[in-house]
Length: 218
Image (cartoon, rainbow, N blue to C red):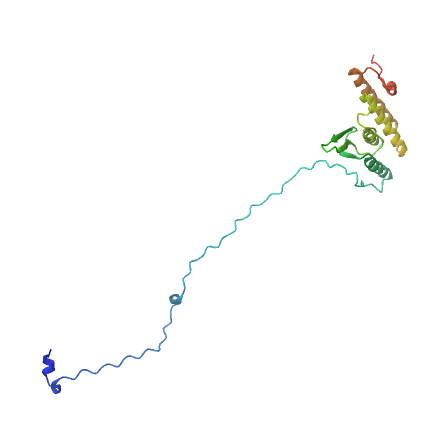
């Protein structure tokens, strides 16, 4: 399709305006923000270990420790008499397989046995620790019950007599002083044992206990 522009001669056509040169790329460096290329990472929560609760020390009550027959007793080098008592204790416990359940502070004692299901028998005593003639006599009296055998003599007052006789013989054999107070303690103990047996209906008094029959009170 021909237009009016096409019918005009070329000499009468206006020249087109010169084309503008293309702009050169600028060499100016524009600083880029660090945030343009930054990689955004979501912050991670750092786990915090829970604070351990403060532990209070657990206090335990100590029970009286039994004496091991294989552990030598601590003896006093400055007191040769105490060292002798300690040697007697150690030898008697080892000889008769006895264990001290408790050292008493009073001049009293007790001896007993514990039999387990497997047939094992533990021989136990409680007594004062020997530090003088009286405490040594009470200790050896309880040892005597195990040395002779608990229940080996009937009635019970006869066993008490033989246990005291064992204690006196052991003290004499070990060179320990058997004082009048020790012999008086033996007499009063046996009088008490005979009196109790008579109250319980003792029919026949062993001849060994005849000197210890208490005199009737007036």
